[in-house]
Image (cartoon, rainbow, N blue to C red; front, side, top):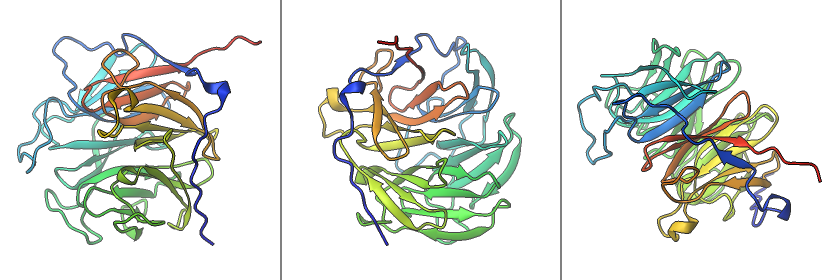
Amino acid sequence: MRIAIFIISLVTAAFAEPQHKVVPGWPKLPEGHVLGLCAGVGVDAQNRVFVFHRSGRKWSNPFPQELIPQPTVSVFEGASGKLLNSWGQNRFIMPHGLTVDHEGNLWLTDVGLHQVFKFTPEGKLLLTLGERAVPGSDHAHFNLPTDVAVLRDGSFYVSDGYKNTRVMKFSTEGRFEFEWGTKGQGDGEFNLPHGIAVDAQGRVIVCDRENERLQLFDLKGGFLEAWKSPQIGKPYGIETSADGRIFIIDGGSPSLKRTERGKAVELNAKGVVTDTFGSFGQAPGQFQLGHDIAIGPDGAVYVAEGTGARVQKFVRQKRLAP
């Protein structure tokens, strides 16, 4: 039985004030180290923050054919913001999604190459899916793939993406298993599946960006429900925590006033919004096209910005007992 739930108004008075605050001055970028548009962010168990960025490369139609000569993956110490390492030069055309799996490996999507990659944290290539710079809609190709979600057994889902509007499931070895989704507004249909994650309950949650909703599925792709509200907005990126919390970054709609564009959102497992923080702008704690979001092992939240071309760190404020 299909059940669609549309959450209309979820923020309670108890969370009228944001629970998260920005950490000013994080990260500490060395002179000359340019991130450019920050497309993806993830954190491993060692509290290392990985940022997938375009190093000055601009989105264009058609995409450039040349690989980005500068590093496109920067690794920061979560606690201090110190740059630990960078790699990925001469490898990518248009960086997009970044996911850290349960073993600490990185999954990266490149919408220019139409490929999905698995790397070690140090940048050693482990797996490549898709044909280089060749878009397609069959089981061996992608068309602007956006993100990856990995299960504990190593099998994974790919949101594919800007053109194919589907989700694909692969085995641990990268063998295609099944897919679902077509373009549309109905249950199980998408209008740009942009971010994807699996939560603590084993639900596959997809940021159905242009339909301005989250769609939830079982592990086989069966539709469960949808969450949609002004608080959720236009979800670009998503991350889930082991204790059942869900964080999304609302990239904001250009049709809205600037003061209403973009925020980070925390939800509980039932889809109830428990916190929103950030707003449109350039100041610390504000966003210009929030593109991805991640949670550290210490609970810190990291937001990668597109137009803002930066990554910011937020921590939960300690509240005094009444």
